[in-house]
Length: 361
Image (cartoon, rainbow, N blue to C red):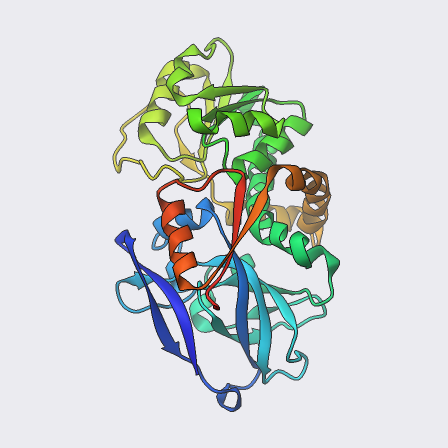
């Protein structure tokens, strides 16, 4: 049996191709293993960040690919088509982190009523969220369009939630205004919603082409295009959350605000325009936000279920906004996947679109 995998060249993401990998037959699976057919996954700009940071943050090790290539992790759904685990039935649906492929063998461990983990050796040493699968058969929260929203935005909104929590626990570093670059991105949209609900002024930084969409979201107090950042008042403290990863933009903002730049957090790389050596900048030193560190910290402080409970409440407030702000676009087959990947890589996906894909024809 074979799986179709979509892989990219690690040092040149424009180069991509489809390959086939051999899978064990149902009767050849090791004990407790599952063969899962991946029938639906989300692809967003966040997946490009996974690829850019693949070596540094160990994303490439999750789903091995031929030498020089990588399989970009995606959030999506799969159906168990063969099972050697006594407590997991054929036909079960799982939600979690999958490769861009048609199939995956999971070494099921820690199997419980609500979920399980992949115990494969190469998937250890990363944040636990990356090898956990929710058992979602019959769960209306993961059915139909609700399921698409979960795949497209729940992982991104978790990042939004953790960044907001980090800022809140530090009293926003004394700032009452937060600047968000790449404000049309889904992670920025979620963070803006959370910041707005706790009374912070949120300023969107975006391209002229996306300004209308960003304004329509209703969670930004001001929308400023990149060519107008010098028009921002610089007499009050600000915090900057950088989803774009554009060195020139970051330098311009730091130079404009100087010592009033109280916090500069790097979250994303939607622009893929970061210089390797940027030199010192005025104001707070830019730092990467690493979500697993915040998860580990809060898991210890809040105890079992603490993160899930707080996140669930935040998601409930955010989910109603999705139907009016997001159009789900479907794509099936290798050609469709390749096109969406390249369009996302080149920044050609309209911000109001969310793409759900499958390599199955």
